[in-house]
Length: 332
Image (tube, rainbow, N blue to C red; front, side, top):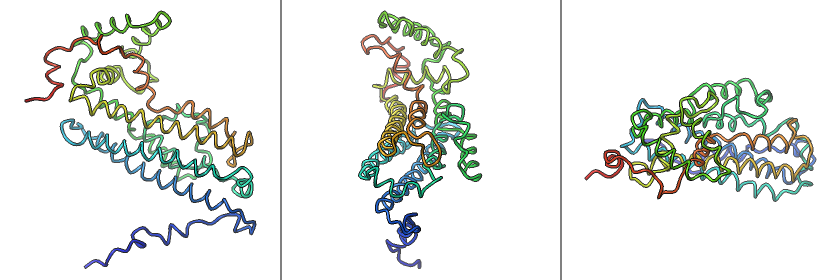
């Protein structure tokens, strides 16, 4: 018989509660707020670990030869990604706790931390890569792993070389069975006409962007293929049909992940500016300027968000072929 499980042992509290060693204590220069600083950052890393747990499970489901849309699998993907959104909201709110520390409180121990920096959080960089942030799209890519240990760099490189959530999303969208190019050109031609008529005079150049994204010549720098873009737009337009409700939730939750990551980056940037002004970060970065540039650039699912530029009013939507409308509804 296994021994009884005890709360203290199950949570490994001896390890967790004895894992805080302030540098100010070692130097006998007491700085009260360093304990808060350590606990918050340890909590961040624990939440990053949970985010990896969720994202890994989602990628495993979506990486199957064929994700079964008629099984609970798609609902599981949406549920776990929604949990990621909630965790990211917690990460944003943790900054509220951090900001109870004043700049002078931080100065009590800041210089003792050099060259340690949040820039060395390999878990966060690995998470970005797993979601779909490509190396070539990173800000400061020439040195973003420069301060990491070799084994940590290898972990990130492995994530970059694997199929990301964004890659798997593209594959899933490409096999959507509705209104593919060629077989259903008349629908897309009608839609383009309706879209063009909905544009204001100042937006007329958007029709060129429409052709670029939804044609086969949409450029090598994009992550979503033309077929995937058409499928995603179709899901957005006709999300009221039962069969498309979960696919729409999947697209929407990915946009929420981007939104929360962006909120976290901007809150972090503003907190850094409040704490150290224009000084250099402890890890040698340009502080606020670096964080702002990364926040402006690191949108992982921006191509999904861009599709919102090509929506039209519901009353102007082209009628669906009867066979497809039947496929999208409940079967009695």
